[in-house]
Image (spheres, rainbow, N blue to C red):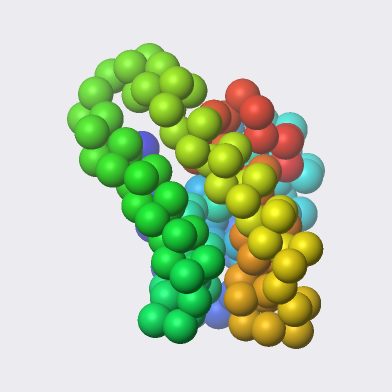
Length: 150
């Protein structure tokens, strides 16, 4: 199920009120206000969508072959999602496990290698670190069984 609940502010208590007795995977935008409720609720696992990570590289694509390559790899993940959309959950899980996991693992290795080569102060360095720091939560969208709790 997908639900969108609007709040006029981003106060930390809003996620608690919205979640109620929810249990499952909660896809969020990385806003820190979701971390505390997820820690308190062992039945909630946070997942980050790829759009925020993708945006960081999209802004650099015209001037960076590395950013262009990252976008190509993320596009491959999106293409797999297009293929499995509407399929039964077990089929989606099997395809993600067979195909998406490999792409995500390769992307992580690629980013780790580039991270050692790029200035930490550059926009590209920031985009790489942003994505690497969120790696486990990004993987949650692909392989829920591999992501950390809370």
